[in-house]
Length: 221
Image (cartoon, rainbow, N blue to C red; front, top):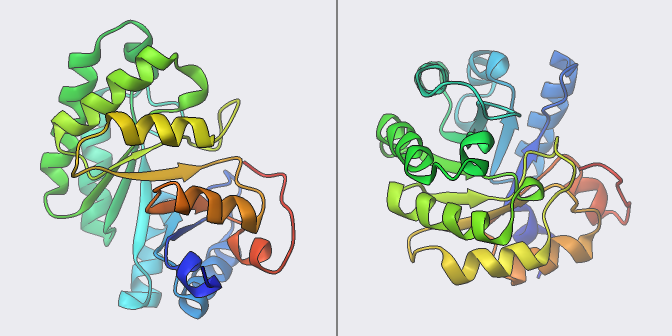
């Protein structure tokens, strides 16, 4: 697998709470240079990035991030605004408390609501695997599939753990045919990138892919 092939699956990410415009510009410039799948940025920067870079970068943002417990109406408003500002892909966080309460139907309905707003735009669903049991992860695979979302995603990168190959294998067994997989968090080396892609991931979310491909190792989630 070539570096270019790997980078074509990377959501090049900068979601630190103190990210400056200079940080975002660097991210976008790298995305243009290395042809990453997207840049994943805070919602507040979407309009500015869209204005400067136009269609040179594919803009992804986050909704209900990173804790997921916003009400559905708030997530819906975030999603609508992001799309209006020029975003093409939404990474939403499920209500983890509702998952833990076993309210799977309610979680599924929220995903369905946001997918309806997204329409032809991509919706990725972050289930934050580090907090879930195997039973809950399987339930989320079913909810994401039934709600018509495009991707299931492991992690925010702000939880207690990130992607594991075991979770990707579990997803692959339980998601529907139309659902793709995204790994995020805990991806530290080029070998990790290749491992997750060969396991079936279509996207990997990381801020450090360029460094990894140059032989660096990152401790970031």
